[in-house]
Length: 144
Image 1 (cartoon, rainbow, N blue to C red):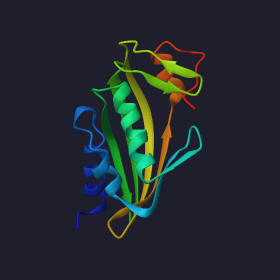
Image 2: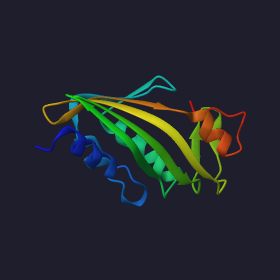
Image 3: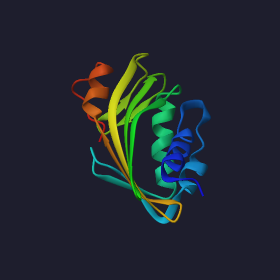
């Protein structure tokens, strides 16, 4: 079994732009595992976890998460990341769909994982949608 840091690094590889593999991403979660988007309060389980990741990759086909820092405390892994990409696809927002702007994003994010028995049981994503929308030039829209 991979140690927890390497396990999480592997998880991120399945969510990268053109190399996205939502089935493998979701397979790394326990049956009870979930992803919580802290900005919107939306909790995803099962296939919905993969759909969430795929939606972002569809809007940003060159999506890359640069892992800036990783902290491991037993079964808890905290990852400081920068989400980067170019807006080349439609982005679904609570207020409608944002057509591609061609603009680049560099959004700060912090992810906290709890891993047990080699599976993610919780993934809390603390992202900054206001920064993404500002970078896309959409000050009056909401992501959720």
